[in-house]
Length: 287
Image (cartoon, rainbow, N blue to C red; front, side):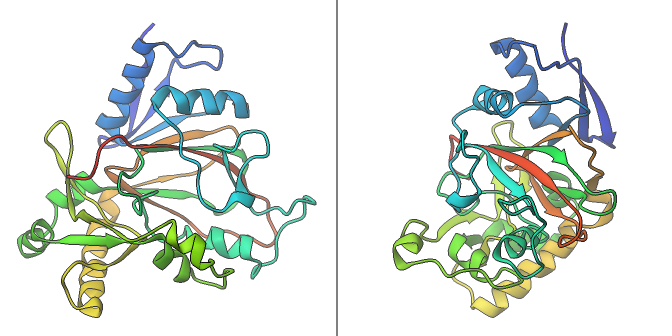
């Protein structure tokens, strides 16, 4: 039985109907999922208990999985899974200024995952194990629609420029104190450049930017950052956004090639939020 995609927000985002945990992930099913991801940008599966093993299976169906920086946040049995949790190893909620909390609060900035790589990732899967009653939503912004909606003067600017993306920069500019990276760690993540406008396999184009951007290539750093902020404000207007209200056992898959996302604030030092993340590696450079 083919999958059904129920559109969430005027063509941006869709809820998948007809995918069960016991379904075999054969080529035909994976092709449907890939097409749905490209068409809608964000896919949602509600109320489906997904084991770590099944989550890795789902990720592998899309491609090779990334092993992310910050090794202490990797799942002990499945290093492909990145634990996004505000709980310490003893099960207690972190304090507001603990490095773990600071890292999570850094995801409240608009970003696209792994843009600091020469070949950025394809998509991310985020599974909700336990979520707070209030706050902690994830917002997604449609960068295809945002590019189409840019004023003509900004459209000309983004068409002509490239952005420098740097993990070292974004980590150092987290809104709080994080332990510094060693020179050896920094050397693993040199800055990379990507075009500000990304062209996709189907010919569509989107903005490609986010929290890992340090500056505009070839432009005064401060002037470039002001320009990036101006474009970001235009690109994240309410009409381009889907906000997901999480429930336990939700799985959201998003296309990092054509979307931005951010965490919305919650009472991080008093309420529990436990998420599991898988990132599927990309196979093509940004063009």
